Length: 416
Image (cartoon, rainbow, N blue to C red; front, side, top):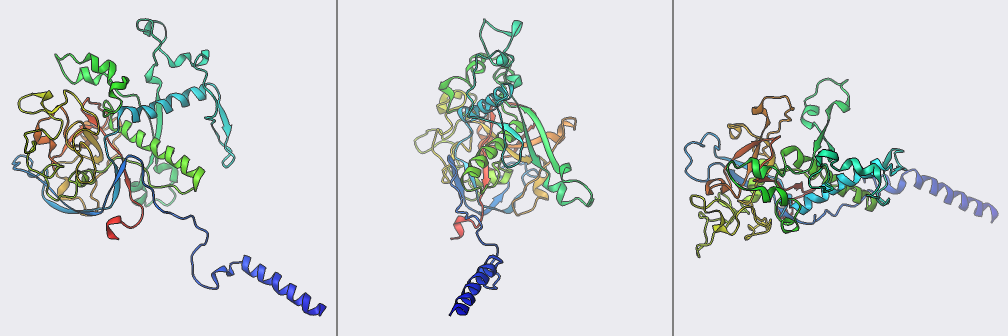
């Protein structure tokens, strides 16, 4: 009986050992077990744009642009997109984060990361804004105006980074280090409020310069005075913000928030209506009652006729059939794509996109980035979903903003 009991115990121990060595697969190819589950995300303030096909090209008679917008059939992968342009208050969250991180650093509010051993900011610390150490964040001496204590926003600098996937994919030097494909850039992230004066000669717009980004009356209006680099920095920061939250939750990160590429933006703007010249699907800028459907420059300059003298709230007017607001008018929007006049002649028909990371000392023509949608100061032609235009990546304008996109992970929802 004792021998039988010992044999039984030995068999149990052996079974436990075998189980710990991987027999849970029962000899089958089941993949790695205990992987984290992925149920997808539903990002706040974003709507889903399903995969589909789009015919790009001229949406109206356009003799001069025939070779800039040649007709082409393309396919777009499903993605999320912000339902409105990024607003002043949303961008201000980014500005405050950079400001507070500078303050924490100056006050030496650091803690050691238990995982990596690196020093990181401890956000639990309270910031004493009266501390003399922080005075260098404000204008001093002769730079003060009317005795006010105002932030020196030139100090609000943020470093973002990206990976040169194209360079890595085409690299034939196997000894080249991974770090050579990691690009970094430091950028001043405070909006250029002087655009309201600089963009319009012999025009009184000083109140907009003083108030547009800071006054609560404009909290829900689209942020402007943001160049292409600043928009990318915001997307990177938004990704880090989300990933830090996810790391504390289930540890599963999502794709990066980013600027939409040109045709992703065009596909979303049409609201599921192929060849629609405007986001609302029709051929006209007015509805049956004669009301204007977007914020632009009607007629010969009747700016307030559409309900907005400058910009309007980011969720003004009716959304298109995807639930996206102001895809035409209000502010033109940055895309990630580089602008080439003949791009339609050679881009792929699968998620077509052209990227070029122009350096600061590159020729100006290398720095052109596609903007879409037209703005509050543009005539109706630029509001068409198929019209392309561009701005230099390092310029800021009172009529250019942006919204973010996020690639959908997994099978497109419209396939179910």
